[in-house]
Image 1 (cartoon, rainbow, N blue to C red):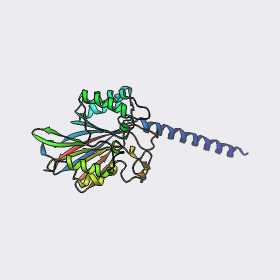
Image 2: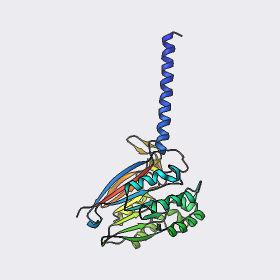
Image 3: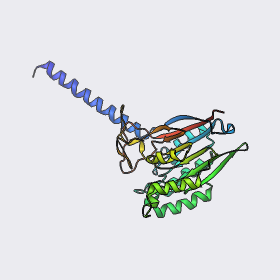
Image 4: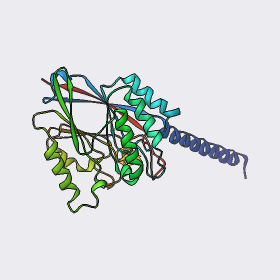
Length: 287
């Protein structure tokens, strides 16, 4: 083989090796490096007393620890100083359940701001451990919402926070999931109050919109797990391939929905082009 051909072959092999190393490094970094995403929601219905109200949205932790005892997550929350922290399901993972990791994170988060939590499908699948965890969360002061609503007061004004239990908890009932969600929202939604809905499942957005929810905070999709440029998420449970709702902000009529890409992984242990995410939301009144 001529010398110049051997040289070209060597350069080609080195280039491929460098490309593979960079790709591997990028994938690893993209699975352990947390992104802080920011959204501003403006509404006529929001009381002016809540202008600038800040929400930290955490979802799908799946027993993940980023930093020792989740120090990186906690430091981000400390620096953001949110008014409330919401956790929209899958705090634990049914495949490798560790209640203590979840409780430790929740206890630290509660020292930063009031915390509101709803279940995901993994809480149902690890039901015995979830019942144990729920009791301890409530003892420490976490507001666990299972088809319940609470009012949050600030300077004499109120907003409503509704939390829906994950649909897998009702999988043995005769009524459809859609009708169960409809019934609960009909009972819980206050017609004259700005309402934030915490629900693990974004695929029911049409129902949330029908009930005039102002802001829906959701998770479950893991951002589509593998995100493709110009296309978005590849697959989301409950929606299949190329899901309509995978991550970020969706607006229909007066209802906004923000889907977190989540922090941890579960059955598929790897993300691609899809960093773990903490969401910071600022509410502004247009009055």
